[in-house]
Amino acid sequence: MREVPTPEPGPGEVRLRITAAGACHSDSFVMGLSAEQYAGFGYPLPMTLGHEGVGVVDALGEGATGVELGEPVAVYGPQGCGRCHSCAAGIENYCSHAAALGITPPGLGKDGVMAEYMIVTDPRLLIPLGGLDPVATVALTDAGLTPYHAIMGSLELLVPGSVAVVIGVGGLGHLAIQLLRTLTSATVIALDISQSKLDFAREVGAHHAFLSDDQAAAQVAEALGPGPVTAVFDFVTTEPVLKIVRSLSGPRTDLVLVGAGAVETTVGLLGQPFGSRIRAPYWGSRPELMEVLELARTGRLSVDTESFSLDEGPEAYRRLHDGELRGRAVVVP
Image (cartoon, rainbow, N blue to C red):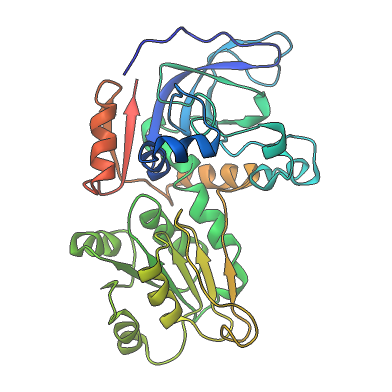
């Protein structure tokens, strides 16, 4: 914790007074980097963490239009150049120019939301919050948007009779289960190493929940019969978990690797089941964030949250890092 000057918005920029900020495993990953690794990402020091944020418009820079002072908004994090084909469609998470232009998400290359105030570079990155509760909503900007985007990429396969597997019932995984139950008619199976997380998975809608060990594929087959599952959404992405993912796959299975880990696998016509796909989706689009917030507004999506004050922020991250959180930690300045 440290005191920093209150930032002033430049031309076209918006200052937000933060009402809730979400703690994410990506933040924990950044804090765990060595000095050499950190430098490799090009992140500045010091840097305020936090890329899940909601707040109210507090000040407008010269020429900034489209939002009103006092308006409650959510921050769209994976911002791009705003001018390319992807950005024009609202798919700024896949902007091809952001890296070259030095455009980074808040808290992942520039000051983020774990503070009383932050600067947003363009009003287009602010999504109206309406009457949604900030604390209950903030994690949807990543922990809700990311699984929504991942699931939408497999939606055409998740027809009646299909089977979807969610690996890792944490902040993203428990929302993925809810989204699968809301958006599809698939049978939903949850895998995790913790029995308490399996109980949590059943609470939020999983039809079945099993330990993610070398018996997982056999347990799935015993519960649902032989045959491959339709889609596997891996929110962990490590080599041991990849073995489970591959054991569940077959023709036309979607292997969706959402976790921040890196794995090695054999691909190609003879290297994977025929017709199967391996995807590594990143975050989500601006229109998708609007859709996620609408699901929350209609009561079909909710985040299991635990609140902390700004002074308690380091403890929130400690509990996140040590796996002591059930859902998502939210810091309230």
